[in-house]
Image 1 (cartoon, protein in one colour):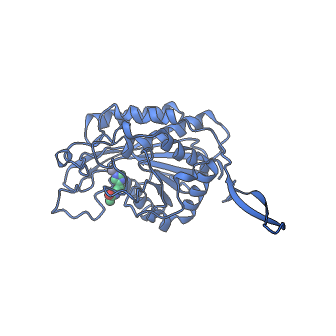
Image 2 (tube, helix red, strand yellow; image 1 turned 90 degrees about the horizontal axis):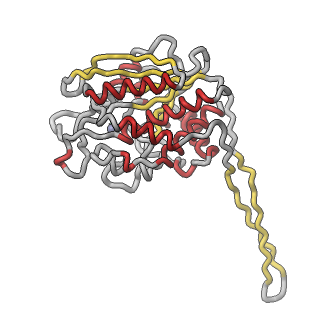
Image 3 (spheres, protein in one colour; image 1 turned 135 degrees about the vertical axis):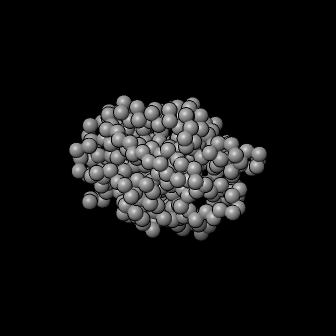
Length: 335
Ligand code: AHN
Ligand code: ZN
């Protein structure tokens, strides 16, 4: 693998300040400033397009497991990836929720350039959480989450990338877009008798990690989780740093080269049990998680709308979608 970073650290601005001292002698002071020049490569990510794909999913209503909106949205997602030239397969399974509910789960796998040996996985979950159990008003805890950010945003960024890849024939590698189902049926906060050991989440990706489609072998993966929220910053997530530090460094460097480094602080955030965990642990596919971290916010480190009834289009910011989308494009085009 060739690590080629288009990071240009050589823009040196020399400021020479001449000052006269009271004795008439000249003082010559030189200050040196280093800046990082952005060098974006690849097609331009269209934030309006990604925003529209986010809204389109929300228009079905909350895509909670076993619901009609979920079924219809799944068909819509498949149709979009097909429209943009991907080969699409589905992986269906009946999975058991923490409460015994049978969840009719469908993972959607959409591939560009199927004959390419060298492949990268992009992934996101597409189901909505059935309970807004982190809402400040407990009267809302049993209402479903619209999941504009926590669900639709990651899928939308992937669909926009699929559109761009179809229009651009210069990329020789293949991309496997995987939409995981049944991520967000994790133990709700009101279930004080049920212990949340972490394994009630990410059921679709756990199943996928133990039942990989034939020949599925990407070099690494990037999970997009809540990539459209206003005010989001993406700190280096702990499990990503543990399993795939080289991929984390590559993606964070790409964010700077793409011109979006301000969204990706070079600091570690929390550790999150998410869809990348089973991929790393079971399938041994190095996968990192791009997930927001709000260090100053008390309500949730994932931000103010997480698992609340306010996770709606009103709180989706096109600039966040663009920062993540253009960073991922940068990674794909600098491999
Ligand atoms: C846990 O709360 C254990 N994981 C969060 C994963 C998640 C939920 N991502 C989006 N929704
Ligand atoms: Zn969630």
